[in-house]
Image (cartoon, rainbow, N blue to C red; front, side, top):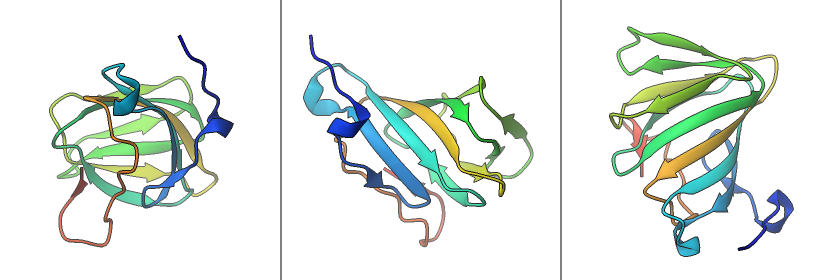
Length: 125
């Protein structure tokens, strides 16, 4: 058993926010848990080709859009979204304030991954 606090891990700047990766591959739990901040007013092109991801919103507001824009989901506290098909998507934080998510990745992240949001296509790792 172990206990880890958000203050025990350094924040990783992932592109349009920061992520405190509380569990990573080295912890041998088989998944990652991260406290993720998405900066207000940002729009991120994302895709996880090697990981499945689920995010639970604990504060702020935003949207998740399908890559082609055909489906839009409103994200607010108490809402979970799951990327169960390695879905390319846009994550948009409302301009009124940052959005905070608890993110779960399977398989786990190493912990130092970052996005390239300036490149062509959807950023992935």
